[in-house]
Structure formats: structure tokens, C-alpha cells
Length: 458
View 1 (cartoon, rainbow, N blue to C red):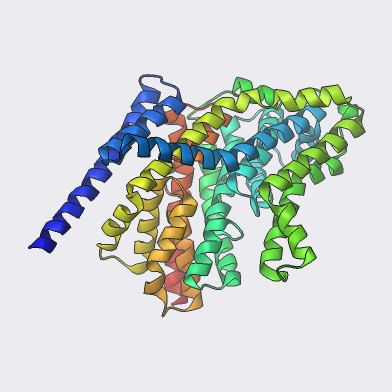
View 2: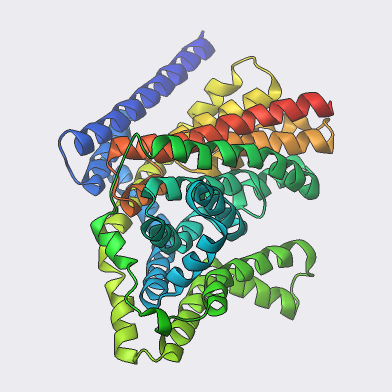
């Protein structure tokens, strides 16, 4: 009798928590879209709604929010600031224009979205999504302007390429953690990941972008767009090689770190150097300094003007940083309330095929926590004991299914959602129609492809 009473109490608490989260998320959307309250304040209020509904003390809610906001700003905030400075240097110097001019020699009209997807795959391979977006932003804006294409037609393929890599392919943290937890073979996972990624990128990127852009026309956002407007005459622009090296430098540095962790002996000088310079903040700092020298001083731009370019890059992203911090605070408050445990209990109580179960758990955890990495890590830990007897190939497919589930329908508790909204000047409805749908397509196609490969390789 006592045990039955405890189970009923746990069930009531779980139900209360899930309802609180749902009410809070609806409240955030209403505050932003109907009452026009600033996103930062709306998310803060939504966090307290969720926390109080879950029974957390006010002090604990505030502490969790501060911790989550500080954590995300300590990582993504610095990266976004460095990326904005780099983007401003590339735009002002004409480097972004030079890269776009070269790309337009090989792709025009209908081919541009496909080119952008390919560029995003190359640039985004070793980069966290946040880093990839700040690196690709000047190229996206200049390409849309120069080719006279709708900005969504250019941006969506790039976003799809980067988020697909983030979900499915090592060296991104989520897939690497899943590979380790499930004891899958890294090489097999990467090979199958590319097979799964190709149709996901095609459907969520060029095809969806070409379909959505004429149905949802948006203009270039004023503040961010102005940040990426070049002012250098064509004859004073840096060469294509210097421009290309600048944008690929952080890619190479971060890829070097991945190579070091996989193939280089730890605690050697080479390992320490590759690991240090491949840290995202270090890689971007080095790149900004490189751009100051190569795109600024070497082109005859005086130090005062270069400094002014760096400074002007920061005010337009102030609102974005606050909003992203609030998203991190909401995520941490939900984790503190125990949402991960609640979702796990609900999901593991269902009776569905193993690979579908893994995907569903990852989907639920992503919706609740707003983090693809948290969803992947937690799901891999949950299903690891269930797949111990499977082959390496099947474990690799399990890792990919989890990664696909971890990007399903990104919404207001995720930093990436707010980055896309603010960078491209979208309202909430437009952000759902672009970023949330892109990730859902990637997630569903990823599940379908893993189920297909599971059947073929069984």
C-alpha cells in the first residue's frame, strides 16, 4: 500500500512538471508574439512560471536561471561576439564579396542553394553550429545581395547543412558521445552518417528553401544586414586566397583538435598544441587577429579604422546575446526541476521497436531541455544497456537515430532558435516555419534512413 502511494505521488509530480513546462512554453510564445514583450523578459517570466509550477522555490529558480544563462553566454556568447567581429572585417574589407564573386562563377540562379549547402557542409564539418553560423553569416548575406536571391533561399540550405552535421557526424560532441556510450565504431558511424545526411540536407536545405522563400518573403534585417555590407572598392579588396584562408582557418584549427583526440598520443607537445588551438574560442580569436592583419593592415587600412570596424560589430548582437542567455537559463531551470528524469520514465514505459524508442526518447528530451547534446548524451546512457548484444553496425545506426531525434523541432528553449531569429530578422512564426521545420525535416529523414539501413544491413 505504501509503495502504491509513492508511485501515485511520483506520477502526480511528473504530470505536474510536464503541464508546467507546457504552460510556460505557451506563455513565452504569447508574451512575445501577442503582447510584444522582449524575448529576454518573456523567457525569464516563462522560466519562473515553469519553476513555480514544478514546485521549485523562487530562489532555486533564480539560481538555476543565472547558472544556465551564464554558462551559455560563457561559451556561445564569446563565440558570437568574435564571429561578429570577424564577419564585419570580412564584409568591410571585401573578403566576403571576393568569396561570393568566385562562387558565382560556378553557380548561378537555381544552382546557388545547392552551392550554399555544399559550402556549409565543408565549413561546418568540424564546427559547432554556433561557430558555423557566425562564420557563414557574411557569406549568406553577401550572396543573397549579389545574386538578388531571397535571403531564405540562400540561408536555409546553409542552415540545413550545418544542423545535419551537428546532429549526425562526429567530431560534433553529441554524435561522439553517442558513439562512445554505445561502443559503436567511429569509422562506420561516420560512413553511415554521410549516407543518412545527404538526403536530409537535400530535403531540408535547397528543396525546402526553394519552396518556402517565395511563400514567406522577408527582407534583409537592417542592423545585422548593415554589419555585413562591404565598403571597400573592388581593386582594394584582398585576394581570393587570403579571403578563403581566413574563413577556413578556424575550420582547420578545430579539425586539428579532433584529429589530435582520435589519433595523436595524449600529453605530447603536438597533442597539446592541436588541442589548444582547436578550442573554439581560441580558434576564432586567432582567426580574428589573422583577419586584422591580413584583411586590414596588409590592405592599407589604418589601425583606427580597423578598431572601429571591430567595435561596430558588437552593438547589433547585444539583444541576441541576452536572448540566448535567457534560453540557457530556461533550459537549466527545467533540468533542475527534473524534466530529464520525467521524460525518461514516460518514454521507457512505452513498447516500441528499439531504434524508434531511442529516437523518441531523444525527441522528448530535446523538447524538454532545448539541448541536442543533452538529449543525445542522456538517451545514449538510457539505451546503452539495451544494445550491448548488437553488432557494431547496428550500434552505429542507433547512435545516428539518437542524433536525428536530438534535433527534432527546435523551439524557444534553445539558443540556436534565437540565433536564427535574430540573425535573419524573423518573428516567432517565421522562425518556427524556417528553423524548427528545417530541424524537423532533418530529424524525420534521419529516422527514416536509419530504419531503412537497419533493414538492409540486418
